[in-house]
Length: 298
Image: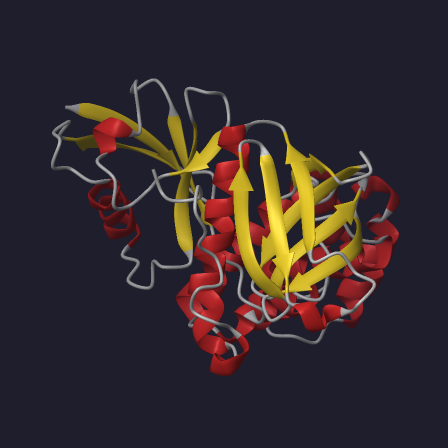
């Protein structure tokens, strides 16, 4: 038996015992983890771990567990895998988990935003704990850091909390409402170089593939614009529809760190597209969009 450690969004930990047999799939372990949370709507979430190659990867649900992990000396992070455009519309139990993810992304600096947005987000987190009380607010902000460089925002956070008329129970919804409008909402950047050799980051979202320079979004390729996504060795290829523009190249190429990283990002794009395709206009997305020779689940 394997003893596998999982860290949850509230930073709690639990070790699960799993039979190490060929027939035990990643999905069996994932279901066990979701069962612990009594989570039924599990499709938005995933288990991330550090592969023996050194890269962070998602646990594959349909693949035997024994083929994915070489040692029990690792831990899994239970986190949000698919970020919908409007998480506040989800069921209450899910909004709680999404709010935890936003708080985690805020505190570790991956959800970057301007000072006003950061202060507003933290004011909603304070509101979860109760209505405005200057002394308690000051004490709380001293004890816990929700955003990097929070000490410069304390005054602004407290001022916004004072004006916050939301009930503590609804604070999660308001937190998500602010977060979903940020450029870096749900973004997991993947370093790459474009055709000119410029360093950029690629990311995939519900709407398509995005290109960032630092934290600034410089291009968006919506699913409707994309004809095919593929990878060749460590090169990630986006083939666009002809009608995008006569002066535009119809194939864009990005060099990533390695073939494994490239394949992993390509696979994430395939999964994101499949996950959100149902909410798109059916005619806008041909079924053959994402598959090409040389790029398959192996």
